[in-house]
Image (cartoon, rainbow, N blue to C red):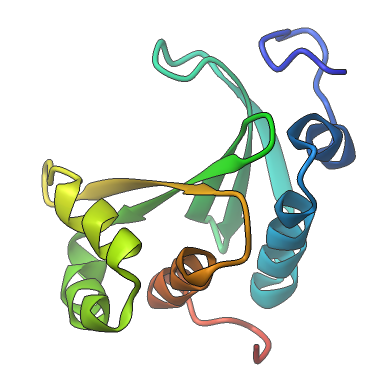
Length: 143
């Protein structure tokens, strides 16, 4: 098993998937890569709140989301910025109550909300994350 806090040993995506022990992690990562034609960037965060390896997805230099691996689930961080606010809030009534709660309970700071969404299955919240990503960037392929 890998140690996500070991800065000296960068894991690959498969090793992170083994750590998470949930097939939804690899499905999520593969779907992001396919839809947005991007590759993952495995980076070490020294942030005091979340030290360790994470997976970032960027497209055309713009961050789509960051994935924080956990045992048996993972957390996706997406940023709702000033550009996305109107579209995101228009989409909220169509989202699951869980996703609406996450959005509404995330404090806005400098015009942004940093949404932290725990995923362990492909439920409605999983689909809501992809709907939100579509606000940030249109997919390169149809879903």
